[in-house]
Amino acid sequence: MQGVERGDRELLDAEALVGHLVPAGSMFAFLAGHRRNLFPDGEFEDLFPSGKGRPSIPASVMASILVLQTLHDLSDRETAEAARCDLRWKVATGMALDDKGFDPSTLVYWRKRLATSGRPHRINDAVRTVVEETGILRGRRKRAVDSTILADAVATQDTITQLISAIRRVDRQVPGAAGQIAKVCTGHDYSRPDKPRIDWDDPAARDALVSALVNDANALVAALADTELEGDAEFALALLALVAGQDVEPAEGSDGTDGRWRIARKVAPDRVVSTVDPDARHTRKSPENRRDGYRAHVAAEPETGIVTDEKVTTAAGTENSDPAVAEEFLDAEDGKRAWYGDSAYGTGDLRGGIDDAGHEAVIKPKPLRAPVEGGFTVDDFTVDDFTVDEQAGTVTCPNDITRPISRTRVATFGALCRACSLRAQCTTSKTGRKIVLHPRDDLLRQARRDWADKPELRESYRTFRPNVERVISQIASRGGRRLKLRYLGTGKNNAWLKRRTAALNLRNLIGRGLTHTAGAWTLAT
Image: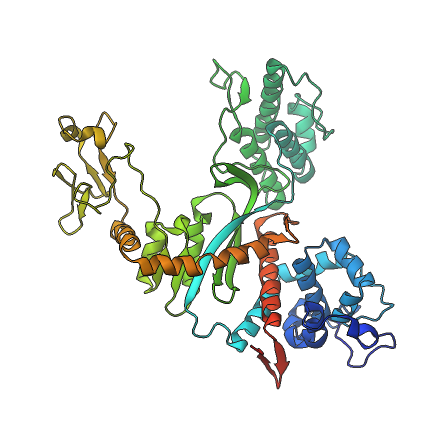
């Protein structure tokens, strides 16, 4: 059953005895005075539908603890220790000085209850309600978007470790798998989690081991192919099949049918980097900076720093790209907005979505690259470059040759390039120049013209877009160190981000004098 806070104070009530030691204007002091207004018991009643049994920790107390935990980036064990030993936490949560606190598993229990409920992000929703009531965003029509990579909670596994781990996972989760492993898997003793003992400096020995493990994996998948599975068992077998194919290729001189394999000489797209957390991915924030983990996307009001939307996705896949998620943020907003973003957001699809919704795009255009250094681009800024006439459905090249745009948005010059005097400035392709146009090419070209011709647009971008980087820094770091995710899977890490942004928004509002008077949330400034 759900526990509720008592109206009377205990003899050793921390707030009454040492509340004066907690700095005014801090998160601790705010929660001490307003946690029950922020997180009323009625908003959490559905988590404990039964009126029987031992009362839970009051919802206002546990929600406050979850906010503090996420804000200070503490583990469950560290959080339980803080609630037991730190006077500030006891004041913030209404505990007595001699309260022994709770077991760390209680936090797991509450997060699971929230995750499986009809409103898994109600802590974030509660803070958004406060933001709305204060009116801090009223009349503010700007939104800035950005993303960052968050390191996952597991170590990246190499191919051999993944194969062994995936087979061991099938052993644990698939009924009857142990017998099949003993029958068809002969390349390694899978009862042992450690790596096989071979001469790792010998390429032939490594290839032989890879071949044995891949053949074992394929044999096990085949042996269990007709077994009816569901849930974790089905996922475990599918993961084994994926791992067995993503990192290997037939050995030199083999087509794979003879059972000879080697580690592939390239990284598979959307590669699973760990069987412990199959959602984690390789990604690059820049060509020189490769990282493993998840991508956190954020939309914020740049003048106040209030986060208006957020989402954690896997770090690979076009559906998880910056512009794709920004379109989701766009759809969640009511009213006209000016959207600020760097060149990563300068795609035709996103610009089209912004234009169709009647919003304004203040997004730095993506730089154009010419096939020949210093040569002609697809743009029509000057008389020398390509000119696109959408109404006529044609593209005209710098040598005044016009070609039609096909139904797939391609203009092919082909053989006409052979005798062209400008060929050396245009293309190195033997088959001539080909222009591929995006369906919203008109918006892309207009954006490049506006960026060049309107200094006020560039000034607005420089004034407001960088502000979101401060928000990103607050989300992804604490005390000068980069945060590392503590949970496995996109769902749990997305819930963490929701709590993180809620805590940061709340801290932002507290700094502006947030208080609850006469039943309403107001700001001093």
